[in-house]
Amino acid sequence: MKAGWKNPWAQTSLKQRMILVFLVLVVPLFALNTYGNYRADQILKRYVTNAYIELNKQNFKLISRDIESINKVASTVFQHPLVQQLDPGDDMSELERVKNYERLENLLSYYSEETDQLEPLYYSLYVYDPSNSYSFAPYYPESRKSGVYFFLDEEKPEWFDEAVAKKGNGYLRLIDHLSPPIRGQKNQQTLAYVRAINNITKAGTIGVLVVSNVNARLGGSMQPVTVPEGELYFTDWNNRILNATTPEAGGVLELPPEVSPDHSQSGVKDVITDDFIYVMNYNYALQQKLVYKVPVKALLQQQNEIKRIILLLSVAYFALGLGMITYFWRSLMTPLQKLVSFVRRYEPGASVPATPVWRRNDEISVLVSSIYEMARRLNGLIHYKYKMDIKQKEAQLQILYQQINPHLLYNTLESIYWKSTMEGNTASAEMIKELSKLMKISLSRGRELITLEEELEHASAYIRLQEHRYEYGFHVTWDVPASLYPYNIPKITLQPLIENAIIHGIKNMGEDGEIVIRAADSGDFMQIQIEDNGYKTVDWAAIDRVLNEERPNPSAGYGIRNIHQRIRLHFGPDYGLSYSGRPGGGTIVTLTLPKTEGSGQ
Image (cartoon, rainbow, N blue to C red; front, side, top):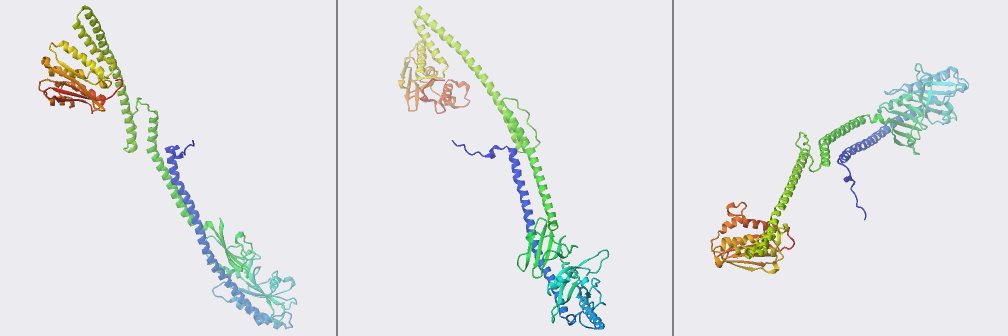
């Protein structure tokens, strides 16, 4: 047969259950706290990233506007007649060259000096002069903030051919020597806008226009952006840093692969790593990128403070819960454990120790006190039963001792009967024989219940003794069916009732006295009646009190009460004696008994 499912909860102790309940209450708290912090971090990062995306777009537009403004001015310079007519190889007098140079200087100074509360830009024109026609003008790298510079082959800047190769397209790049010198620093780089100036009417390149100090202008556009402990980078398409809020210009910005721009012309990319949030706005046409690098640690610093407070509260809750569990463990489980130990060690009848005192009046204390008191009461009952058993044995022994005397008397009567018979005293012998029958049936081998047949034999022997005793005669009529003989009846039940009928009924009536003994089958029970024709007045109320009152008057006698009580003890309250008057005078006593068979006990 397949074994049934066993509940594992039933195999655990109360201590394990309390620990499990505590863990069920506490572990989800920390799990929810951890999950909540994780989700809060993710949501905050996403919201902040979205905010930086919008900020980056606006910032990139501002930078693009600055670059577009530079490009427009460069286009104006590009188209100016002084620039377009510049040709170092022309046959011009020295004076004309000097005047032309001054006019160009003033033109470039004019654009360089314009201010609108922004950082100034310095416009410089670099012209290749292989014939050294402008030897009076300064040569590169003897540069100023703005102006016109002529150079020979050996003085050509490194970026000149690069700018010419772009065929008039302007671009940004880092250039040395074109920023105001700073003490202690050499070869300082500056971000410049470089564009080759082509001759509109003739083929060829006039020179290269360099707009320096662009880093200051872009820095002014990037400065208002506040990123907590973050960094802003303006790079070219190859991630070379053109300008930054940190002194890292010229280096290469390392970005996660996920931030690589798409193939589209422009767009925005964002990536959230464990350490940084990257937001990049790019423009492929301009070959430019604006990158925000925000440290997550700084971003979440304020939230980490809240998380630390929540963690502190959780730890405090855990400590409080642990303290409460410990308190309830000591106040609840310690008494219960001691009670369990007492119950396991307790043996009925053994000495019960003093009840533990807990100095409180809760359910546990009541339970402990009740169990200790119950153990004491159980010990009292055990001791009482032990004493009662001893007394019962003593009573049984006493009964056995008392039975010895009737047996001895019965045997003695038998000896006297035989002796009287031998001597010819027939009447005495018959009386002795009837008396010995009474003694024999009274013993009944210790049985309390005997058959009706045996009880009738006992009653007959008693009647014959009474007939020998009294000189006058009385009539006795027997009407008992043989079918009722096997049923049980308490022994010595009929004899006291017949004795009452003789003494209280027909005594002194001589031959007129009559006693009738009859029995009837009434289904599940039988009724036995003993009638007499006595003439005396009967106090029926007194008889009823003797039979039914709990404490009757002792002077009324106990004979019939004894019979009534014995019948009820054996068979129940539905059976017993009842008295009634006989029509024409006399008394009828009725015994109601169940029809039971078997050996009496």
